[in-house]
Image 1: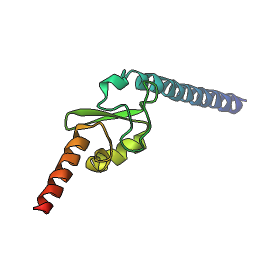
Image 2: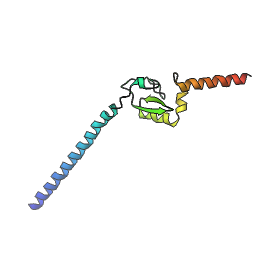
Image 3: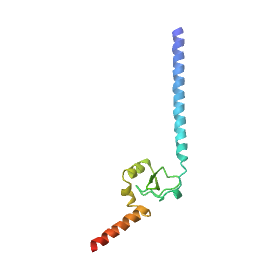
Image 4: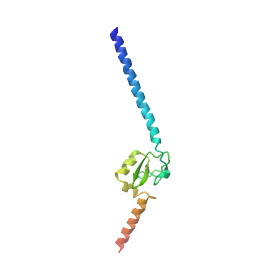
Length: 118
């Protein structure tokens, strides 16, 4: 009889620990979206209101991540787009109209074209 009581006690304590651990993980997950929302980044803070990788128009609610490159803040629709951008920012900025880098890139191409005509 004592063995049965001990086994039941151990099972009860184990079950209690499992439930409390699961509850903590759920609480952590519930806090994550709140932490992400605390970014408080809006499109007017971005250099352009477009994801430079996929071209998606960003809104205040669709900005999933940001990165700073050469003093400019860029927004992304996903962590995947941010990772691609960070791997080769010049590749993506060269194709985005309305950015200083794009305008500089176009100017360099025009100058290069003029030099070849001489």
